[in-house]
Amino acid sequence: MVSTSTQIAGFHFENCLMNAAGIYCMTKEELMEIENSQAGSFITKTGTLEARSGNPEPRYSATSLGSINSMGLPNLGFHYYLDFVRELEKEESSKNHFLSVVGLSPDETHLILKEIQASDYQGLVELNLSCPNVPGKPQIAYDFEMTENILSDIFSYYKKPLGIKLPPYFDIVHFDQAASIFNKFPLSFVNCINSIGNGLVIDDEQVVIKPKQGFGGIGGDYIKPTALANVHAFYQRLNPSIQIIGTGGVKSGRDAFEHILCGASMVQIGTALQEEGPAIFSRILKELEEIMLEKGYHSLEDFRGKLHYLS
Ligand code: RRO
Image (tube, rainbow, N blue to C red):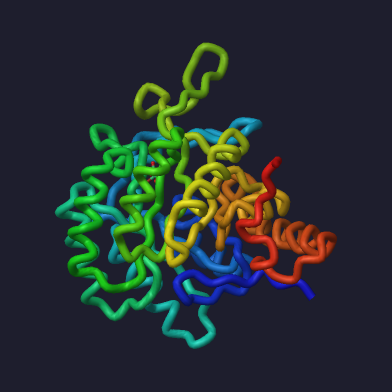
């Protein structure tokens, strides 16, 4: 028997696969498609204080190696997602879920998190510190001073399980600096990685998405090595109480296996889910189980973080 079950901050999941925030999670209908698939959980679209329509279309485009997007944080407002998840989790048999949120300013982020703190929602929250696509708003997690200040303010009042969605880092010194900040706080998890920000895809002589003169976040095959490096760098540096969620370039059981080998406790699927639809979860789950069976691994703990180095 092979088990791909896992837990994050004590919340149990039947298996370790789920959607990445932004994919199949804008409406209740899309979220129910993930809920009714083989996914172990879902995460909502990042919710802001007020609903947003986002950037002009076309704002997502797939290529043979992945995707580019500049959605611009379209969402129905965090209350919509909070109410939906609270409703769903009233059922004894419900899966556990993740609520993704961020404000357009630190003040807005605090308003959102204070409301969640005061609500009866007891589940997991992911704070998105890495949206690359809101014109005029830099990615918070690339500003270490601001990140530390925000986390410090948040944890003065927020006592429920909270994790953060990170952008990719590309320098060993940045892994060190970021990890030393995150280790100061009672974070439940970090999620590595969001899309690689501000890439450019060109078709003939023209960009493929409308916002920001074609610049957008890159996902899919392009980003797997960067994602794996970030998962493993934080696995090596963070307190063991801070778990890792691996996101980036997962379209097969082998990709999920590699994320877990690098230290991931849960694995999210973005571009490939967008392209293949929710049936992808049963396929990838089966492929992951076959790899584990072949290698004689019974559970994720048998190989999580146990990446081999060349001596
Ligand atoms: O909505 C978006 O443009 C978006 C967000 Br919030 C994010 O975190 N990552 C991304 O690639 N797109």
